[in-house]
Length: 223
Image (tube, rainbow, N blue to C red; front, side, top):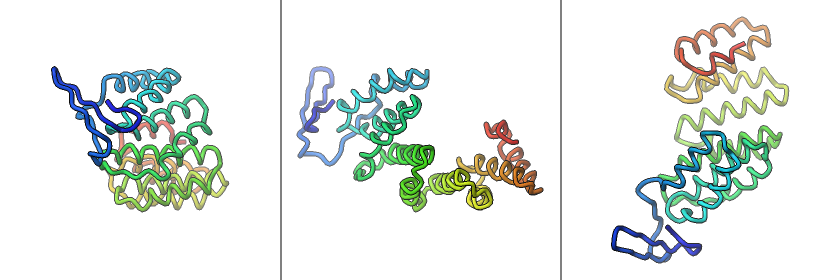
């Protein structure tokens, strides 16, 4: 565990070792703490208020040993689920200037950024969302790049620019590899929008979705 100053206390059987914050660059527990896993269980069980309180408290306990970004992301996720989107954005704001020394935190950081962009789009903060998406779009991770294109499509849909949105969704749908996590949603969005626009190409994209992802949740969302 760690204290507010970042000094770490390591306990193993009879031995206790204390490490000053000035003596390490970053630290990470070898496995997720049990109380953090318990908070995840509450989140999975949709007990968002309880989980939120846990993540908030556990942030202070584990912020210096690898789980600060994770706790912030999950607390914000709870706030979002509870409909407190502005509070979620306020919590995620700390990620704006976050310097990630530990590369193992990057997945948590990117999940936080994705949530941040999604909430901004939900609340019509499009300019702010585009700034976040610009950072994600420059990533070498194809899943993040595809997410950025899909989110830009979401903005255009909310602005009533369906034809322009189709072009954004088509990039993940046609260019990215089949294993890309964002591609099924892109195919679904293209198929649905083309159908709304009375474009006979809609069936082409719905057929690709059915063929490439027979178990996808997005099959149920096809119009």
